[in-house]
Image 1 (cartoon, one colour):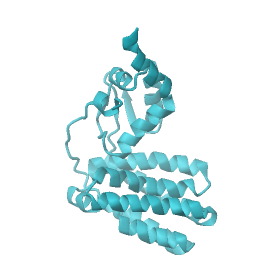
Image 2: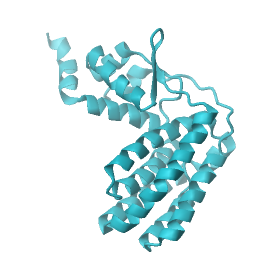
Image 3: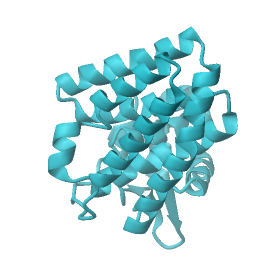
Length: 238
């Protein structure tokens, strides 16, 4: 009975939402590459929960197009096509410009300070050549703007798009461009923050659109090959 205790403790501590967040975080942090197989049994052992619970999380991820469910092969991280990649950036431009306007209209001093804090952390990650952290933080920068925009629907939509953007960058970002950028690009984020702090909607919209188009221009549509991670080691508690 004692051997089962650690699993029982993990299962009691982790909700389905916790497991979902851990997997999404791994995608955004580029620790789960497109095409990575997500075996229910291995995930269940890693998180200390039943396969039934893992399956429910995977179904939710599939609904958000982060995971693909195949009847014969099980679940895997989605591999976006070039057309899907272009569509995601088009969708981001469509929704992030009104999100930005709403943020400027509604953001408190605390909201602005939170965005500035994330930018400082992103800059530090770039200085230390921590590409994974820089990419994750660049996504958090955009999500923090959405959180301060006071529109839960658009925030949820953007969260899905940011996760899919991470998949797209892992698959299609030009290696040389990615090596120099380490994420979205702190200089562009800094200019955008300055416009938001000045409550300059016109300039902020122009900078956001240019920023997203710049990121899209880094796509080469020649996917890199990489080894699949050990799922159990990735999610097992230290």
